[in-house]
Image (cartoon, rainbow, N blue to C red):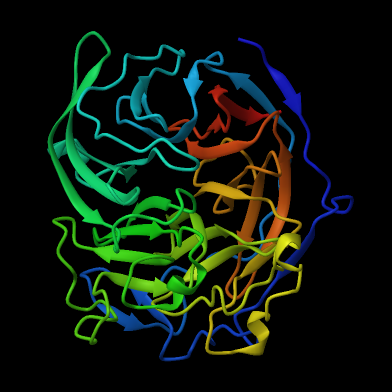
Length: 411
């Protein structure tokens, strides 16, 4: 396997303008504001004066030099997500509708049987894969995908039981669609979102894009441009913020999102999200049960075909939640993690975002009130997804028709 060394893009020389927004005085809430909502163990929703597990003061930045080692050849077709199994193998989704089991030696299984039919058009297809919090005992996995329909494709989330065979292949049984985006049938097969995360108390969170129907992101009568919160059986938690509100979809947790592709619960128990902005204005957000503004405001501008005018900024309306960090020009964020390993010295607790247009891994450090990009690692292609291996190495998939699984280690 070929090993190639890459060095970080120096921040001082980077052409991107990176805007860090503090929580105080920039359209977000003060840390002691009673409207600052977090999820705490036991399913309660409560105000919080500060993170339950505060992130530490700034640590050494650490080196951004890496060595990349291709694990497979260009044999994966439009991969979108990956997750490590307890035995060290990986599940990898391919947007045409295939789920693969891949060993760390690069052996790729036949397509796992029992995957739902998908609409593989534009940005749609088979999207995220996640292990159930109780996977070791129940063998449940979760898939998000563009579900075909007579009026167009819609985002859906399925739970299934994974059986692994001795020959390295697998199958899914007991498939159950837990959630479908409403209304059914997207006007465009783009901006699906589809990222899955589980809270410390076991609740299911899903990002749902607005399918380029911008105004719908502000309406509570649909689940376009939203983050969804559910129990794992598909029922709605009684403490969701819009339960009981007339004409509101009760599974909604937050609104005003555009195209959210990153979602992860931090070690402090808080939910972080990344999403693509328009022409500029990609976002890294601390998620609360609030309105994040799209399309009423953005840190980006309208596309040149739309006149190129800037959107109103979050600072103009304190009732909308501003991003902790935004990027112009865009990084086009894909998946992301919070790094918890020891292999990359100085990286612990940093968030690592997969960069599509930026062809990079982007390191973001969060302190009590701010998020800052502290490093950018150049990669050989657009990167769709990043995950941390048990040994602390990073594994990524390229975003292209024929793509590789790559292992990233310190260089």
